[in-house]
Amino acid sequence: MSNPVVAIVGRPNVGKSTVFNRIAGERISIVEDIAGVTRDRIYTHSEWLGQKFDLIDTGGIDIGDEPFLTQITEQAEIAINEADVIVFVVSVKEGVTDADEKVAHILYRSDKPVIVAVNKVDNPELKGDIYDFYSLGFGEPVAISSTHGIGIGDLLDQVCRSFPEMNEQEEDNEIKFSLIGRPNVGKSSLVNAILGENRVIVSNIEGTTRDAIDTPFVTESGDEFSVIDTAGIRKKGKVYENTEKYAVLRAMRAIDRSDVVLVVLNAEEGIREQDKRVAGYAHEAGRGMIILVNKWDTVKKDNRTMQEFEDLIRREFQYLSYAPIIFVSAVTKQRLDKLPALIKRINENHERRISSSVLNDVIMDAIARNPTPTDNGKRLRIYYTTQVAVKPPTFVIFVNDTELMHFSYERFIENQIREAFDFVGTPVHIIERRRK
Image (cartoon, rainbow, N blue to C red; front, side, top):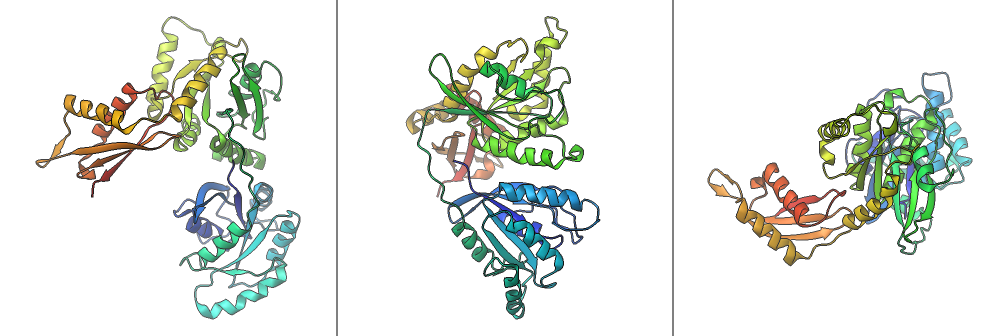
């Protein structure tokens, strides 16, 4: 089930990015005291009192001829369309401005719950001024100070009360997977080839796919899948159309809804820096991963070409050492018949649970072969290991001192776990805890 989405909107320089960072709990958006600094919508996950939601920061909405304002307005409207709840940020210091009223008119059309957050209420004397914002027509405003964190809890309480009822979907056996990558690497063509029919628009023009499209299908063996074809993720500095920026948001949300993510590379173009960033989105989300090298049929090859390309991938994507690599062609359908079984295997690995007794036997055997390190005469002691989560598999190791767990030894432990159990295609998270 997808999380509800909250969009933060408002005219420039009212403190939207500071509000975003305060809710997100970290400095994600660039904050600068110059109107219009935020150019791109920023997207992150957040949580309040157990309620998870996705958060979108937008560029300021304004009506005028300033640079970027038309694009920022369109961008914010896209975020508004995507949102379940809108936080309309205004500033108590300037009061209700013409720009605020024009933003309000845009929000009237959204037919979404709108909460007015009156920012920069940094002292109690200013609180009486917030009632002027009743004139915007969205009910009782909430006084906040994003700089000092005042009123953020009240704002989030109201946001969570405004979420629509999210009906829990029944558990099913359907495995969801998405294809992500730069524009024009052949994702839509691969979807069509996998499905065996033209269900997605295919074009040689970069960025043809604008939305995330779910297509369920069943294999001959009876396995149920749903493929999510996402819009190409393009480098920020080269994204000129707001629909492309919207596509990045939808692609990231598609990753969140996926069990397994297929990172598509273009064999003709090799590896670009943006490929690493695209793959990084899915890796950070902890999804099962496969690296697909598409258009392999167009590459001139000898008996070393495939191994050399695979070695290049391993060097450039060191953090994806667990992800299998498949060289495919959407045109000839080369090796695509292997994908469903591999996706199913990786999904099983992604949700695999290991009993604590078996897990600790493996860890103790590993320590016997490679004793724990020492530092200044103090040796790391591992007392107990247990699995605490799946999707991805997450293990907590209780030790005498977390500072003694060097990165290299943590990697050794992870490799031993991978060797003992089938975790191909899935990240493995290890957390050290000091035993109390």
